[in-house]
Image 1: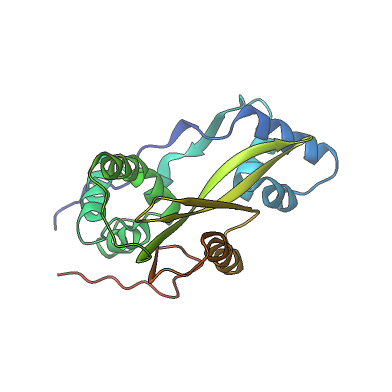
Image 2 (image 1 turned 90 degrees about the vertical axis):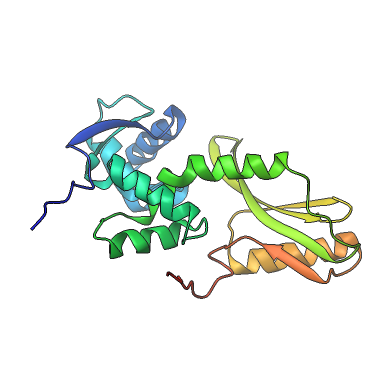
Length: 219
């Protein structure tokens, strides 16, 4: 029986992860009596990250010590990128499922980090190409972006719904504190009111708040 190359890398590594300001807030809130779960929810970081920085108080801000067992090795990363560009059709969730079918244990978060540079590359290529032309009133594109802003003593993640008319390239932006289904619906309705009408089609990304189930079709 052939022995496969391990899909995880050796024991430990330093990974740039959390900036100094977030680490300072984690420790400050903990001194104020907050628990790890509440801090994680407030700062929108993983609970394990909060616990790690509270436990390892000598760890330099901006560097996270974590086991490498949750990171893919070079062959597995190459396979993840191949699947991302191929049968997964640029969907990290589907890549995760296909990797598991091939015996490679990986979380969705790990896969998203692996494909993130490729995703940025694809977006840059899209911007560099000639735009897809549509008739007036035919299509509106909608997506969410994020921006971390400082409000008083707190750092808040603002979620920005951006709607663009494909023909005129007119833009509408509305800020939210989350990206739930209600936020999508409210933002899209506000865009309709702003533009003064309803397009024939609304084109959105594969957002979790809008998708009930994902199906993977492989050869």
